[in-house]
Structure formats: structure tokens, C-alpha cells
Length: 129
Image (cartoon, rainbow, N blue to C red; front, side, top):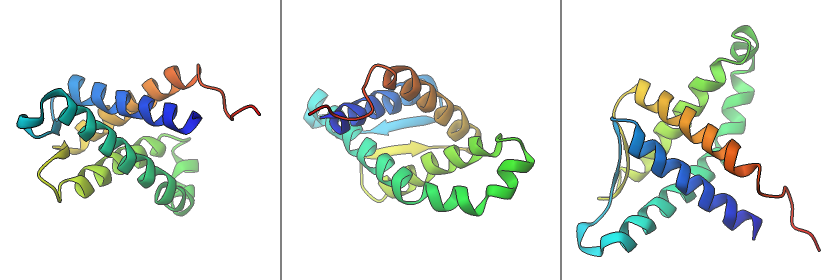
């Protein structure tokens, strides 16, 4: 259940980033209405979660010298690249996430990180038996 709540928090964070950052948009089929938009946001959140779980650890390990050299600021670039990679993966369909430009990805990743941090504080780390 915790994983579903965290996925919903990520979906809300991506929706807010697309709503607040000018060059980030969510493309959804118009004929499906609100349900279609919600499904697209959840699908993008699933792809974003998979990218962060599978690709991000390897990128962080390979870029460790840059992270140390920049005192952690390079992690912003890594987060932006993960958002951009999610957009590139979902661009293969007619719907999904579109990120136009590097700075849009940076600002979007900052918003997603902050929303995940704030809303994630209310979710326990693991399920209780």
C-alpha cells in the first residue's frame, strides 16, 4: 500500500511540475476527458519511478567525482536528466510527458523533488504488520 501512495505522490508532483513550469507539458487524449489525463499522469509516474530505480543509481555512481567536486549540486543535473529521460521514453507514444529544454527539466525536477519530500514526510517508510 505504501508503494501505491508513493506512486500517487509522484504523479501529483509530476502534474504540479507540468502545471507550474512553462516548457513541461502532459499530453493526453482529449476524448477520454479527466480519466484519460489521470491515467496518463499515473503512467508517466510509473515510468519516472522505474527510471529512478533502474538508471539513476548507475548514473550517480559513475558521476560520483562530479557530485563530490560540486558539493552535491550535480545531483540537480542528474535529477533533470532522469526527468528528461522519462520524457524521451514517453515521447514514443502520442501521449505522455514533454520537456522542452534543459532548464525546464531542472526546474521541473526541483519541483518534483520538493513535492515528493513534503508529501512523502506523511507516508511511513514501510508497512506495519
